[in-house]
Length: 211
Ligand SMILES: [Zn+2]
Image 1 (cartoon, rainbow, N blue to C red):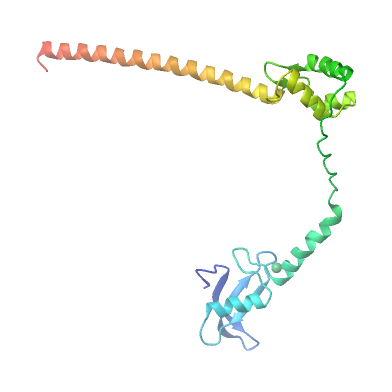
Image 2 (cartoon, rainbow, N blue to C red; image 1 turned 60 degrees about the vertical axis):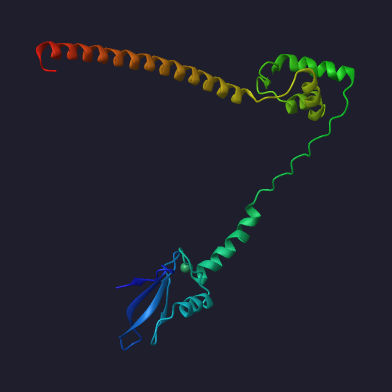
């Protein structure tokens, strides 16, 4: 029978045959969560938890809820270095271009673009457009597009997706309010119907002398 230590449940106290003569001796046993490797510390006379923990640590084990043997720990160390060459190099995001003043002609072109795809009322771009895309298509820093859009058309409050979500939420809220007012009306009707019946019952009982 194995007894798990309370503060180190990964350590078990067991009695196992030791050596060739098969004499059984108490030992503290740890099993690797990775490869099921087992390490034992034979207990000569008295069990000492601190010493045992120190022993396994010295042997290169990592104790804890999911104990690992030195071999598994070594393999863990190798994995990241193996992975390194596989890592894709993420290009650094282009630093946000600084807005520059637009020429009157550029302003006209930006305005024409925005007219077709920016909903001023909702503050959203339509057709998947964005400051960036307009800037790209006109060869103008998108920060300048943003600056001009803010002044001429107003702030960006979201995009089509968030606007659609907001629309859905508004609709659900309206539905919910309708159901709630309907049920409160129904609750009121049921309650008053019950009251009427109760009044009739009381009157009848009184009349019949049951009251
Ligand atoms: Zn292992």
